[in-house]
Image (cartoon, rainbow, N blue to C red; front, side):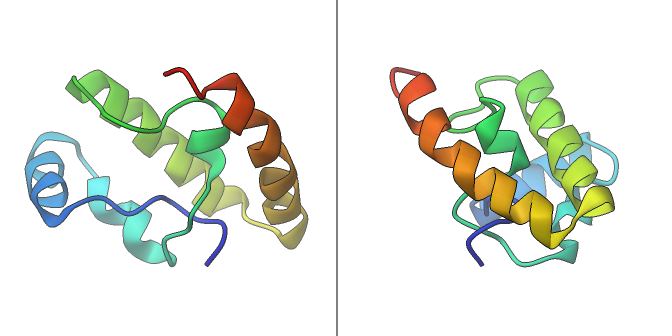
Length: 88
């Protein structure tokens, strides 16, 4: 998929599924190369559990509010997010 929760390494899935409740809920749709969390700056490394929790919150919001229009909006906003968050 183009849009969907970004995949994590298996080690991260195991770790965070033990720390954050409902973490694996994000696997209810196909992973994508961009997503709701990414266009809001929650991408890349997650040096602490709070950042991963925020990313998960955005992923779950996306799952609950999915629509074709939302996917097109995310794809459009990804272009701007690339430049906005490129130095992070």
